[in-house]
Amino acid sequence: MAEPLLDISGVTKTYGRTVANEDVEFQVDAGRIHAVLGENGAGKSTLMKVIYGVTKPDAGTVNWEGQPVDIASPSEARRLGIGMVFQHFSLFETLTVTENISLAVPGNKADLARRIREASARFGLDVEPDAHVHQLTVGERQRIEILRCVLQEPKLIILDEPTSVLPPQGILKLFETLKTLASEGIAVVFISHKLDEIRALCDSATIMRAGRVVGVVNPKEESAKSLTQLMIGQEVAAMSPRSSAKAGADVMQVKAMSLEPENPYAPKLSNLSLTLKAGDILGIAGVSGNGQGSLTRALAGEIRTQTDVITLQDQPVGTLGPEARRRLGLHFIPEERLGRGAVPEHSLSENTALTTFHSGLLSRGFLRLSKRRARAQQVITRMDVRCSGPDAAATSLSGGNLQKFIVSREMELAPKVLIAEQPTWGVDVGAAAAIRQRLLDLRDQGVAILIVSEELEELMEICDRIQVMFRGQLSAPVGVGQTSIDHIGLAMAGEFDALEAAHA
Image (cartoon, rainbow, N blue to C red; front, side, top):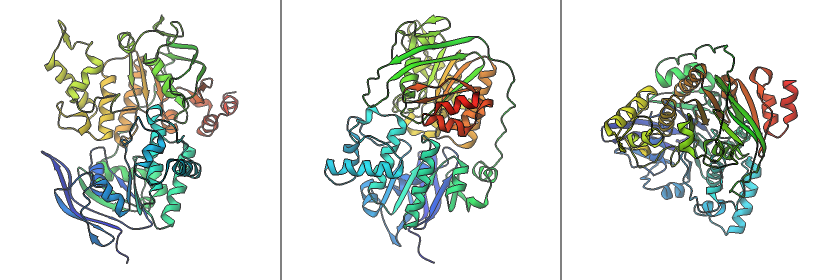
């Protein structure tokens, strides 16, 4: 048999008392698509950082093409032929797409812009080369990362949750691309919490739990249930049956809202209308970059509108900011975890106070630090956030655990309205089920909920109504029982008539 392209033996990495990787064995063959599965905090990201030269292991050996190597930096990894797309992006926000890619891919800007456009079309990863990164959505930024990696022509590509913000059509196109790359001898390491994707795409899978490898399997011969049991050591609790209670009164309304975004590459919002009802979940489906970010910012108060365009609890709030809307019971879970949902360098205790300081954490103008810490511990415990405690820095958490923390922080505040962007992005199957159950519990308690997600299965599973966003326009709402994923997919491409025909 041919030697593995990558052969890792005995890799161990600790951070203080936390063991991130323990005696890990890991092999990847050329021309194969190999999955890495595990819960949030299982050690997957640490192992990938070792391979990519971001993290130096405390012990163990790494062999590349049969030779021992010391991968001391990402530039050394790229020189060997290893490329990686991180779950948390590594882009300079003030530079253009082309300028960011030029830092890793040689060539003049005009030629590189042409290559970006060609690769965008080939791989279905639409992005504008001249756009500045700070103007782009999370989904568009992920496309840049994937393009930058592919344009380096690596021998091994590591993809960390690459499909989390891609539409169904984009996922299929990406899979076709990865299979083509594998047929040409390129190895792919694929990290995803979407077990159906793993079973459909990957040739083999390494299962990690608590920093250790607990098995290597052929995912095509496993069920989603068996893979889940390998990852977490037990079955995932089934969601409770949905309540049949009818929606209550209107809590938040948007009436014919039009907005010209500051971002010149974002679509203008045109005549948008929606209603959030007590005890009801409204889902917004759509490909990232069609105006969802502008909509949620306007609802949260980060973008101001005319006074009476948005009403909350029968009060016009178009000119009110985020804090004033929070006091009226609106809470917001943004899709950007680091920098918007949490301050990376601050502790979880400090991050807890960002949106909750007005709810009992102040005394005579001073923060009650012991109560803040207790609140943080409550948030951590409620959603089983894997961390060293309230004093852990936000940036020290895995992406999925930070997501759980932010979601739990907002849910603990007894909101009257909850707006959630990509609420289960990057979390493992058990945590995703827990978050969805919490959303349903809040709904049954009378909370009005808006979910923006590109996970169509998720929207169909927990939403009562769905609207589709395309190029700044919003379809009419339709009940989930009156449509299908296929009809929603057509509407995501602009064919609103398909959704309305299904509704009729």
